[in-house]
Image (cartoon, rainbow, N blue to C red; front, side, top):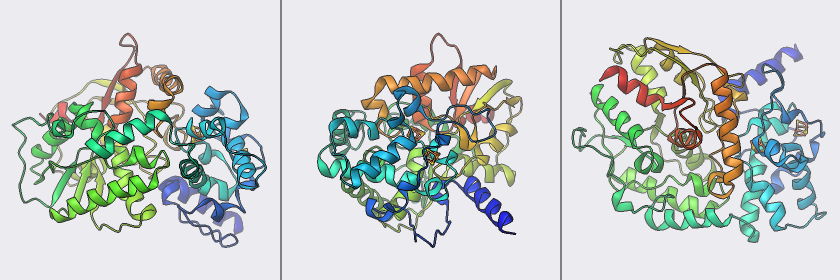
Length: 418
Ligand code: SF4
Ligand code: SF4
């Protein structure tokens, strides 16, 4: 009976993502999003078994930790980081720039945490990885210089790309039809606005084709994910407050976003970390499109003969538990053949763009991307498909000699309905 219960719990975590786990460890009374003190009785439970280095089952014990595989030293894996957390919080080790770098040279992709079989670590290690970044910021060891630079631009120009806020809507073609009093907003996000504009155009065109009343708010600013993920909680909270007030005052009740990072930030970080119960219903594009497929409103007119593989973005996968919706939509496109990579769903290898690493640890970030591209090619797929403009941008920047194509799911859908 006890065994049955345990199986149910594990399945629950896998099905809903670590961020959604609601396991109650009554013995420790653990909650999410607390400070280091709250977790002090559990991070020392790490048994240094090394299980967090490779996939626990299903994928031939493939490596899962970009930080460890690049750093090639125990401190970069979760087990080593746990030991560092323990040593730093029990005054056995002092903070230094080098120690801070170990915590920042990690994309907080959570792949390690999925593998660890210690229940408290499995569900809560992500909390102290983030709490260590907050601590580094408080003590002046974080964020990294490049992260400070993009944060300055976010606070002044509402985007991390050193672009002007006034140029944010330059991607928007005149044929996109918006409904001025719609209570549904398309939250575009910085990467689609400035770097992967085809994702923004495809999303807006899909919404138009489906006759959805929506609008794009012209003073939309960065959701704050790159600021929050680098431990700068107060600044990120400030951005969240501004965004929420702006959207609420405009009468927005529903948001659709095509960005995995924006989705998680609005849906999880704003209410659960910052305590802003904004009441806006937030959906990630594939979730929304799956419902339109199910009710027959989304019809694919054209065939798209292509072998593809799907990359799970960490922010909607492990962080939010969305694995099925993108696959269900992708597989319904006529002519598409989906071939999974060895490391998929909760075992997916991170593309290496998140957690602030792409700006500050370029070599590490490229290493992670190239490893994923190699794995995608091994499937014999012609293209790697994701549903996050940041992942897309990362793949495009690291694909060499057209070895494989990269698309956002929205771009493929657009090809089949327009
Ligand atoms: S974090 Fe978990 S899997 Fe990794 S070494 Fe510690 S106990 Fe083992
Ligand atoms: S969060 Fe990702 S990069 Fe960081 S230690 Fe875990 S697996 Fe490695």
